[in-house]
Image 1: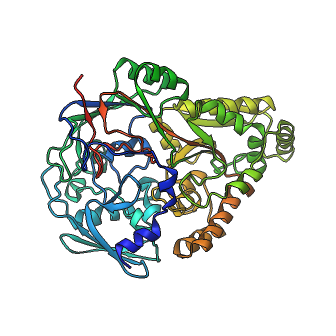
Image 2: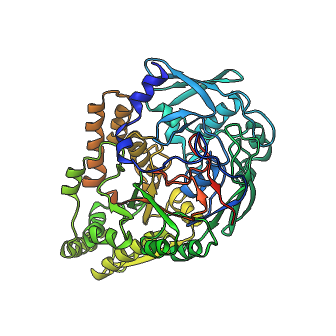
Image 3: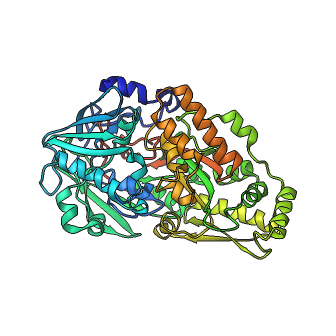
Length: 528
């Protein structure tokens, strides 16, 4: 099977129609001639957790290290897979052996050349890491072994046929010699990659500054620096854009959109390929009880909740985990089976839980969120509704790194809110990540045990017939959401950014990434 045929098979073309208008062109890659220099300052809600791409999967970290490291393959502006560190690739007809030809002459910013040995090491260290440490293992767990026949060739042998592997291959390449020399913790604080920027300074929760890699192989970035400013309060972030203190704001609050527009700052929006949910960590009672999870769902009007927390069209209610642009959403069925608010029913379930000894009337029910204003507001609404029926519900708010540690690495039971964007445009990236008992992310967060669903996930992975795969994924979605209420689906959030008019070429990406220097754009600034 050729690379062209595989891409045509794997990439879901429907997303191109869905996301028309997202991530437009710009300078670079044939665009208008830009100007060199300047610092692009971006207000972000959360600071990065670590800059080691093999040891984190949270979006705040990804958005920074995507600018520091090259991936083996990448996306064009229409989310098609294109070459990056890999110039070309081939797969056997059964999609079990994949050969990538590494581009010659790519240099890490310490001057050493990126080779097949670095590629193999970057994948193998994810595979070899403990489940909770790698945070990406489930994405490439189908790899059986990796070989490097020569300096510029790497071969992946898979345990199973897996046509979407080309998307899973978009892992970041780290320098083997340096990670082994300095250790993972030090590398996560002082990374070295081959991407368009390199780390200049990182003062946690204050700012993180990247400086231009003048020797970047693809093109010289126009920007001299990119600075990320953590500003957890969305209103404060919007005011910073209005005053010119920052050039860009991520996840602009709906309540601030008109004020930002009236101040002459551009507001750009596109539909986000994401899913946010209220989840239950099943590590102990009452959270591991289905009746308890239904009680929480019945207590709250999710339509009204989402309308309240996402203003001015900044998102839509989710009914299942499949995000816009990915199949099969089975939207009509999921809407028809979604639980509607019924406080009398919620109260009845609460009394039954008490009489059955699952919980006491004063048992604390913890709703844990990070300092994201949308998540905090949603938590406040659910907690208030639970208190209305007599539950001792409590809202706990933590800063991002402590929250991630609690949700990903801990084993305490509580209610939480998280979001995800599928790594590839394929339902495997949704369902395997969220509901496989072997997943070191979603499955571990929930505390799922091995079940027949794992066999179904494997069957869907190894089947090339789309109709069969659709039926399997619909069954898994029904099992997870309708029958077991592991999640209360929350929302699909639009990607909304505020952009100062002096910024050229920056458009919102449906994946939420920062498209600053890519195969199709090279952002630049007018001088202040």
